[in-house]
Length: 51
Image (cartoon, rainbow, N blue to C red; front, top):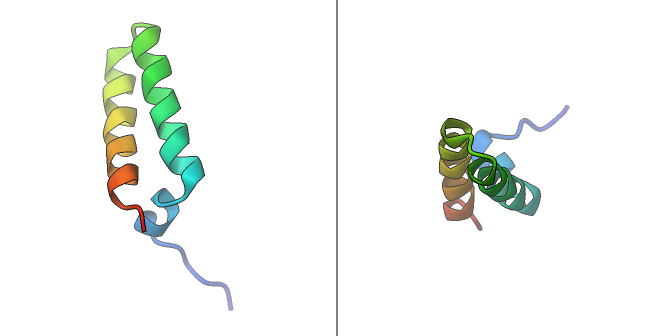
């Protein structure tokens, strides 16, 4: 039987933390502020759910 991963456990991986942070920075640097805000919020959540 496969184990289901929750959103919290998926966001606690280093790839999620650094990936969303990079996307937020890249979005802000290219002037796409709405996607930068959304990915910034996801990055903040990912960094705060660290184990």
